[in-house]
Length: 306
Image (tube, rainbow, N blue to C red):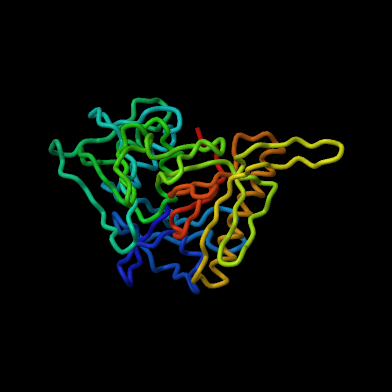
């Protein structure tokens, strides 16, 4: 899970923010939907897994919680279109909200009653599905974390076209229309905001420049090595993350996260793994670079993306 509700303030906290807290309360968070206890995990500087929340051993989300349903679906979601036994498609998180405006939104049901949700596949134990009850209605869930939306995009590639998505200041669309992979410098449209993603240039470390972090992307024209010149990029695309007003710890933690993804990608390249390091940016390209001022509008992922 990438979000939890702080039991003291009742506010939604992104797992991405855990690394920037002076002290993390291990007993201070619950699931935003079903309110069971969840535990902050992997938020320390030395951790190589992305920050997240997990449920205590021996417990599970309540039956009506979408996280219980997702846990079952995710086992086959990269291979097939996911829908319930009623024929309705499984909808991904539908809205990226600002933290102060975040509310869980559930649309009115189109049909009444509760049904057992099933996937037409033999890969999931039937007992797991029988234990889950899910209201037969479409859900438009919101999140303060781009990371959660990105995770849905990666995990459910076959449900992108049917899943509506709302981004701040952008005309509503779907996961298929509001995400775009950038493979060359002419690919992103200047000034058009959406979620862009591309591979990171793992051989080049991100660095701090004045009030910003500069991240190198594997987009541009690659010039191969010769006997005289080392291989290098021309017209290389970068991401500039504005850190004005941040404390040094916040800046260093983001920098460490970026360079960790680069290290994993570099090791993956040597073993010819399908996984790679990706930058996902909600924003637009200006003057040859993605410029981001909100750290919640960018995330760095080590995974395979189709």
